[in-house]
Amino acid sequence: MTTPTSAARGQPLSAVLRTLAQETGRERVSIGELLHALGDRALGALLFIFAFPNVLPVPPGTSAILGAPLVFLAAQLMLGRAPWLPSVVANRSIAHADFSALVRRVEPWLQRAERMLRPRLAHLAQPPMEYAIGLVCLLLALILFLPIPLGNVLPALSISVLALAILERDGLWVVAGLGVAAGATALVSGVIYAMVKAAVYFVVNILQ
Image (cartoon, rainbow, N blue to C red; front, side):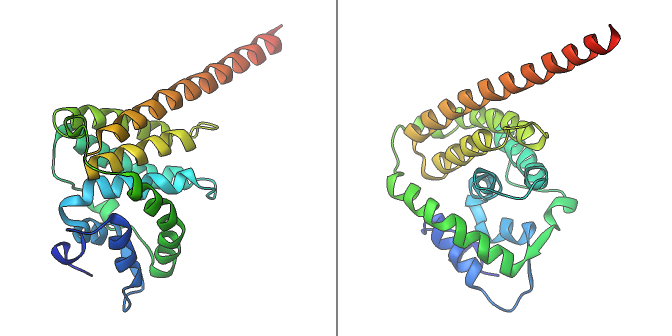
């Protein structure tokens, strides 16, 4: 797989992913290999890679699979640690053909975002603010991991926006991502409240 120096530095993330997707000679791509190939951009890049597919229509249960790495990565961003994943997560892999198909699906959206991203209000996208962003992403990743109706799209979109903001040191996108996070929290809170209220109503009526 392409080395971090040749792939991850000095190129837009969309170009890095395209290069990885076009590599031949391997049947599967593991999360650990992506971590290595993305180099010093791995944390923000992997947050985006695992979050954004949940914005698109995906099979049921996908959010639980992709949510586990997000929890680990967001926690490391919050703590200011270098990206690391336990072997049980890092050794997970997908078929190279499926990875290439995923990149083709994500790339147009990512390229549009990259045209709007640029370094500005950088203090909002670097430590210590970066640690607070990590906390927000961790809470959103936990929501994404749980089987909450309508609990996928907005948390995943918020993590995606915040991840790209960190990659490009774009403070304006940090503000936008935090705004989406607030909307996601309000929506999920409303859904949980409605579920609890419905459950209580159901139980009360059964006991009568």
